[in-house]
Image (tube, rainbow, N blue to C red; front, side, top):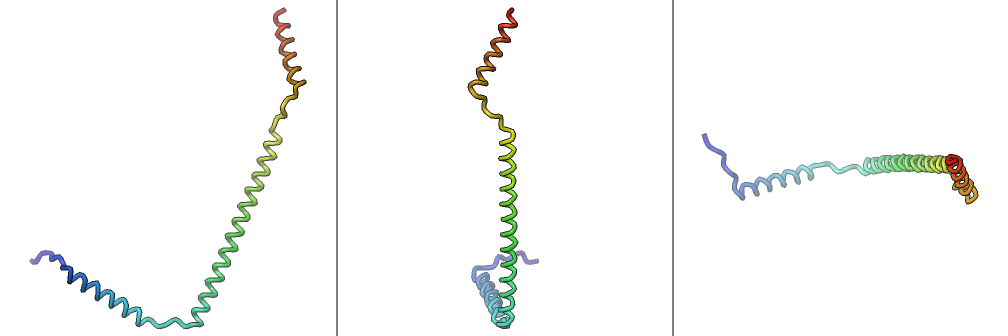
Length: 107
């Protein structure tokens, strides 16, 4: 029984050349594409591209609108939850109440 024989460099290049020639021959034997069929395919591809672009634009517009609505809702919620800053008079009244309550407890 014979063992495995490593192919030489010349054998590998010859095999690669044969494969290249076979692929070129296969390409050369391929019939040319009819111009009417090619134009039809091109029109169909352009229609698909236009539909995909329209769908993408609609999706982006919907996402942008949802973000804007979410932003408006968040701003409205923040505005509703915001407690107005107390004025100087209110702060003074609160201090006076604390002071009075402390005095009252001491008595």
